[in-house]
Length: 89
Image (cartoon, rainbow, N blue to C red; front, side):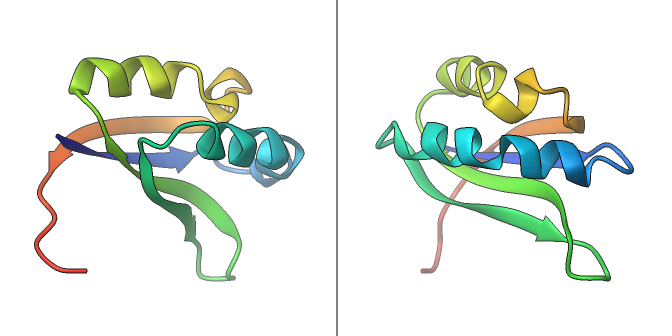
């Protein structure tokens, strides 16, 4: 099953994101369950959230999200995990 993780950063948290980015990217690369990932950008082109497409069960995705370095750094204002169906791409 594919799960879309949609996260929005807390306002003013760009420094937290940048400080934890290397650990987050290493975490993404540490599993083959991540199919694609990248940041959302605000009107100034600055990172302000995340989209990660995971290939795992919803329960596994909940555990994965809880162990993300960004989550541990308290970066996010909100995180949604939604089952997702790839149609194109």
